[in-house]
Length: 380
Figure (tube, rainbow, N blue to C red):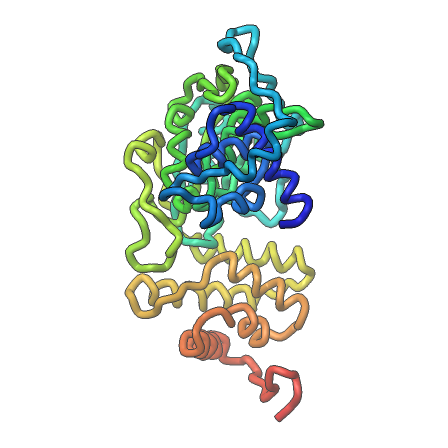
């Protein structure tokens, strides 16, 4: 192991000696929790979990590693019970974050409802679901921006846990302190907390149960009680309704515990925008990139609408999202070539699907000139 890793590993061992002076065998969870106290990660404690150190499944003996360190470690003194006046020092990032208004945003769908909910400053958890790329997150962000509200976005993934959400111990300037996470920060500041792609989470996010009730929360690691300030609210976005993805489109989507879902006051199922609204969105993006072409915008939206109807009828396995149309517009501003822009932006699809989508577009835009250029831009 390198020097940095050796130092952090020794610190973990010294702390174990200090707290458990008569013990040499430890459960893996004890070692991990000790490492987390110092803000360490897997790379710092994994070197300890070797075959030679393992005495049984999940238990490791560090006698040989600890003996050389015992002479330089003083046993921990008895720690008095934490009282109201003796709580662990905690810190929080004081910087406020506000969503910025985006000129490309077009209000539609449940946007006005979200604005009313946020404006009420009532604790009113909202669960927003819908296919990827239809503007769920953007809508929540712009609702907060419209009202000038503090906005904290937390990207959820399968590894997200209590330490990521509520906070954990960090080693700062040689002192162990509790650093409050984004959820506690949002509560104290009365901010809008966005749990983005919440259906990617595991049961580790069940630590949010009490918070989703809008009540004060006891921080177990410090004994501090955090009371939500006026205006605090939780909005979650997801591709599914929390029941997993049966069609396999969202393989990382998990089944969310019903007790967790039940704490959301309302659920919004967001579809793609209408053709009129989506045309406005595409045109605004064309203006943003200096490539306004009303005819092209209309053809793109018509093309996407046909594909979606076919998708809903189980005729194709892929769909063109609003986000994908905006990507095509951006690409068109660079290459000034409609077919090349489409070709590059749908290249992630399999060859048959890509060919079918391109062929459909040539029928929608029957005046298009199809070149014989290959991928290298050389004429055949």
